[in-house]
Image (tube, rainbow, N blue to C red; front, side, top):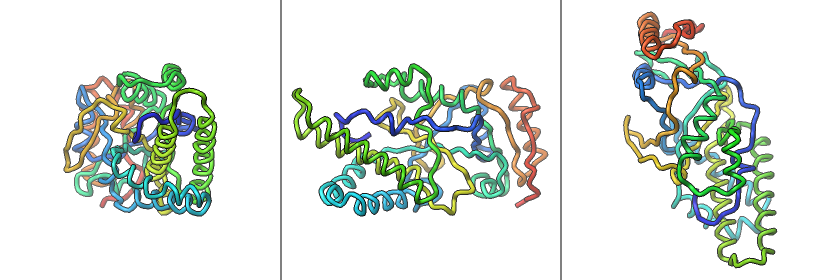
Length: 303
């Protein structure tokens, strides 16, 4: 997450939200087969390899414009350094979910047109516990006492709902920047050996992280029907090695506990739905899951 020696941002990055009890992940049949293997895991994809090549730029530009308009002095002093800092630490990996499990737009966008695919309903409570332990608690990272307690208490971690409306994004940024700015001013009065340079680097690093976070969760309103939630994995926070498959760089996000995590499996309307339904039944039986969790899309779309 950028520079060292920054201050605790858990109240921003790990704020509890009203998370739905089930979130859905759309994927192809090929990936579904891999996910149903005994020791499967979910991977996060580097943000520069997302389907919409402009969406990260959208969030970055929104942040830069907001900072310049509302904090002109701060923008003038730190603008170029913030961008350079992010370019040097752009190890952000994303896993996407949706509140909606049977959406025509997402069948078209995220499953294979010929072979079809599925949406996997995942129980959020179990998902959050998995993220907490797999990414942070067992990572060997030295956490502040506040953040360590945060994870021990099994609270939701950094899975946030994407922001589509400009006023919503502006409200988030106003709250976050005010918090960072206040924290910086308070710490300037510290009587210990922390240097002004250390404080300045921490301040810069926090703003850099906020810019990256905004780029990861702020989306154009045209995508609002997807009702997307995202897990963002910072490479600096995990001990997993980078892997590449499907032509994209990825990091392990969490181990997939089929028995406890899967709520439902919906078969896409296109592709050979009957064949894919039978395949899902076979794979579920292998993982000791009831076939009652499998259903077919209600959409009449056939591709």
